[in-house]
Image (tube, rainbow, N blue to C red; front, top):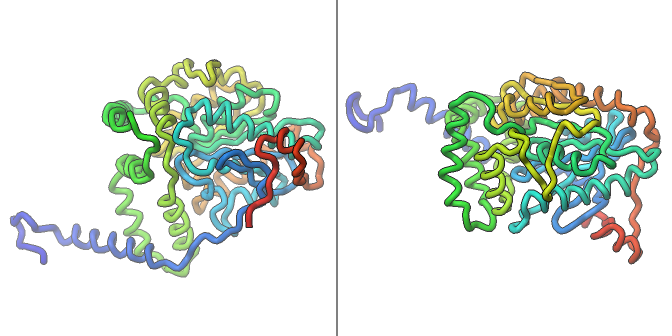
Length: 381
């Protein structure tokens, strides 16, 4: 019932219509029959819950590092819409680091100088050893790009190129309103996170949604009007399923990020240290490909651009896309996948690479298990 104008419960007809469309969109999403059912690629290394997945392909080996707070599947979303599978078919050999579930006690040093550094070493040793001794290209998405920058500074002997996709660096850059929101978030969340072992997914999702709450309702209203048999509808459902399948974040890492990144802006001030070592992007002398999507609300472009200035051999791409749309949206192939493939293809490693697919073989000997930490394991099926 809609009460008469002037009563406390009255709503304008346009508001009622918008609310109904939003609810139709939610119900249509819940009822949509599509589910992601892609099998995982072969597993070539594991440590704890983390693993390396091998996408095969011929060309430079690219180790892709996703964020900790969303699953890696956005980079391998659908059989006919997957950045990693598309690159593997076009002269690139992607490896994917799946972080697994949260490690409650892990700090940034544990993740970067520990697990990521060992994954880089495993990728270099197990997959790229036959490619004339060249290093691997390290590619990080969002928070994974910040991690990748630090890892490249810590292990320059193993990295021959760096790809940073919407990677935040100067956390206080951008308009003053965004900075005020960041500081308010730090003041509010600090006490709440002081004793937690992990930060729940619902809290992380709420923080993202609060940045633009009207956008959530608007996207479901648009979905309600889509043809359910269209590619656009399937892509919407795939992305929304991914977005709502987040991963809890280590409490120790969350507290460190909140303090060192968002409150104190240590990377942007040139004062960030990992494992006690200063992380200086200007010391990373390998070719770098940096993206700062112009419509990114999660990592505003002003926060990602500084890396293109600090890295001595960087090129900057500023696609007309958002944070997720750049990697998995309808225009992702044009705005990111193709430019990235072209850049990778021009690297010296691409010209030297063995044109035969390089495959890691399982070595279950005790010596191999000791050498490789957790050893090379087959994908469990």
